[in-house]
Image (cartoon, rainbow, N blue to C red):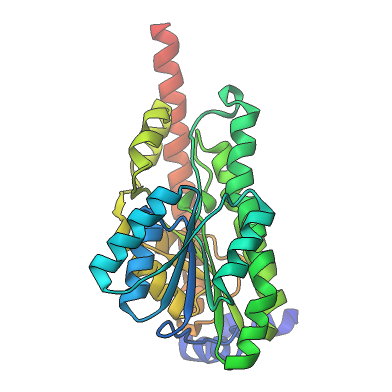
Length: 326
C-alpha cells in the first residue's frame, strides 16, 4: 500500500486523475427528488423552510418537522402559496426519540432525510451553563441520532423496492470544520456530526443510501439576530470574516449537493476552501474534487496556519488592550 501511495505522488496530473477516478469511493450517484418523499426537520423557518419550498417546486412529496405546531401550519401555508403543493407537517421535539419515531411512522417511508434542526448559543465555555451546553448537544447531535435511527429501517426497505439511491443529509456548520473562540460547545456538537456521517456512510452504502454533510456559514435565519446578541466581542471580530448568506441560497446549494450525492457540501467559496483544508479521510466520490484536495492540501495547510496566526494575534491583542483598560 505504501508503494502504491508513493507511486501516485510521482505520476503526472493526468495519471493522478485517472488513479483517483479508480480509487474515489463511494461511487458517484444522482439522487432523484421528483416524486420522492423528502422529510426535513427544522422545516418551519430558515434554511429548512427554504429547502422544503425548493423540493416542493421540484415535485417532491415534502414533510416538515418542528416543535411549534402553529409555525408549522404557517410554513405549510407559505409553501402551498409559493409552489401550489401541500406538505405534511409533524410537531415533535427531536430530543424526544419516541415522538420522532411516531412522526416518521405517520409520515411514511422517507427517500431523502434532511436533518436540518439545530440551535446555537455562543459563549466562552467557562461562562456557559452546563444546562445550555447539554441543550445544544441534545438537539444538534442526539436529535440527529434519533432521526436517523427512526428513519433508517424503512429507508432501507424503500431503496430495495424502488432500486433508487436515497440520501441522509445532515446540516452541520462551518463551525463544525474549524473551532472558533466562543463556539466551544456549539463546535463540539457540530464536529461530532462529521464522525457520525463518516461512519454512517460506511454502514449504509450497501443499501444505496448516500450521506451528505452540509456546512453553511452564518445564515440569515430568524434565530441569527438573537444569537448574535450573545456573541462575545472576540467572536464577532474573528468570525466576522465569514460572510452571512441568504437562507434560500444555502437551501439551493444544499439541495444541489444532496442530489449530486456529495458527502461534503460547502455553501460558498470560503466553505469550498475549508472542505479542501479539512478533507482528511472523508469519503469522496468525485475524482476531480479528490484531485483538487490532493494537490491543494499543502497550500490549504499553509493558509490555515496563516489564519490561525491572525486569530491568535487578535486574541492576544484584545486581551492586552482590555487588561490596560481594566
